[in-house]
Length: 90
Image 1: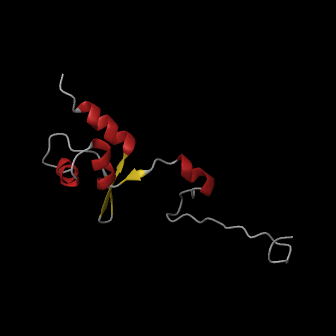
Image 2: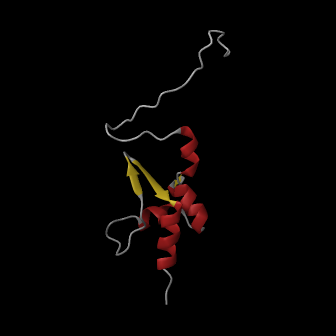
Image 3: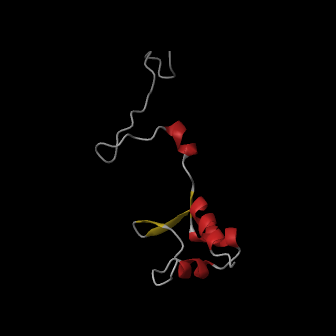
């Protein structure tokens, strides 16, 4: 019996936000890559936040890859690292 004493287990049913997409199960969330803020990227690369925002401007030849979620900008750490490696002068 569960905590409510009625013999039913409390189970959450996940519904997709977008029809046709399979919802992500809670235990799968850890497998997803964390999205970083501009502040996180600045700390990672040891630069100022305004530098990170400058790198994402489209007028750059090779802008820093980012994801725009509404008004928020986020970065995938793996993509930031690949971009950073590509900036290396040969």
